[in-house]
Length: 187
Image 1: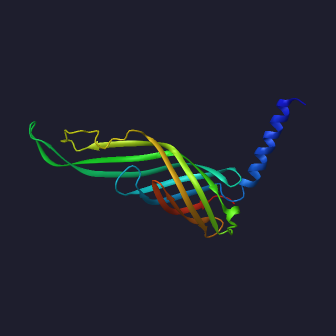
Image 2: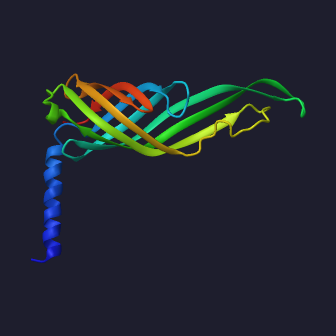
Image 3: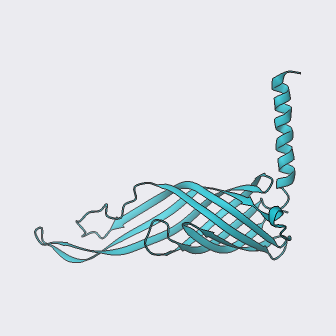
């Protein structure tokens, strides 16, 4: 046999081997959450988050995600020279992070029972940002502007399974922390 054929066979066996383990309980899960975010701001804001996990390897999933949050703040500004009165001008920003969350489950290592999942994860993506100022604001419109649309987040979390289909999760992270429901499409 050629090296190429042997490599292909070994690769296919490895994929089937990992998929056999991974289909056990983590993937095919829709996670819907609400929470509080601090991502890039000095104060918290409400966040809505959704992702869909699929199995990649034993104890490891990937989940495309989308989140939504909105931020607004007043900025006191004025310019007497150009006849712009001093007052609070309002800035509003809507952010929609989109990306992939990689999750590693530690249930085997922690000897967790079937009701609990424990994990560490990381999210990588980009943020779609729409920002605006009051129409009569003539100051520095880059005052709040982000320098990058890169979205990074680290997570630690747990899920409690009510049954084979429904669970509740708590996801604490470096940017956006959520609580929500996990809907398992198939076990």
